[in-house]
Length: 306
Image (cartoon, rainbow, N blue to C red; front, top):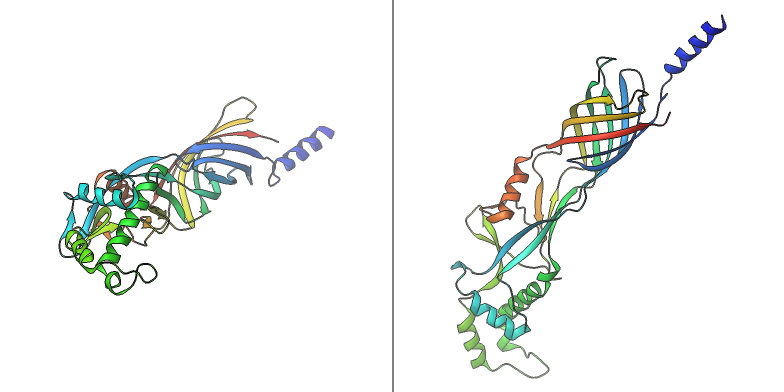
């Protein structure tokens, strides 16, 4: 009678909700993750944790060129503009700007695993990820800072020389520029235009020339929805006889609300407003556009605490 009562008590304990607790670590397309999990029943398990992507750099570069309204983009005059910028700043400006792209995803996750067969490891999984909207960023390397600052100085000088202020207003105290000098500078610079990064073309055919921001930086950020539902399939297998060490493999998709928006520091949407983006930047933009959902593949190792 005692043994029967003990057995019944054991069966009842096994039926308790949250009777086990596992801790796990995972690696996959969502980055590195840590979580805890527990079985609610023999057929249902819940997992909760945090995933984050390491800041691995993906290099890319853009060319510096000049642009004038009515003329368009010109590339053959860069050496002349380099000389101007050297005279103004004593900085030798490179003809290309290097950027480092980095994923920045950090998400809390809550997943529910449903095992249709009690004795088999196959399962369906549904749940959600929630985190910041910014999923990646690209920013110029530190070595490009002097060149970008020089570009800003040149563009400010160009705007000033071409404005009425150059002749009508004193540039210091009561000292005015020589009008003949201003006219000579205008004649020399009027066909050169502003300096900028020719990223691509707007849909109306006008070139998109990205200029550095007030800090002398160029930046692009990728934005997705904060709340991202998840659906997928998976498999769970024990790695030892005691079933304390387990392996999980997941295949699914994170639904992040269509293609990410790639927004530059000046507010331009590269995903929807700009076309003909060349080189590696164009490849990255095309890749991001193709991901209407984010593929999730991960491997998880876990240990049963009790």
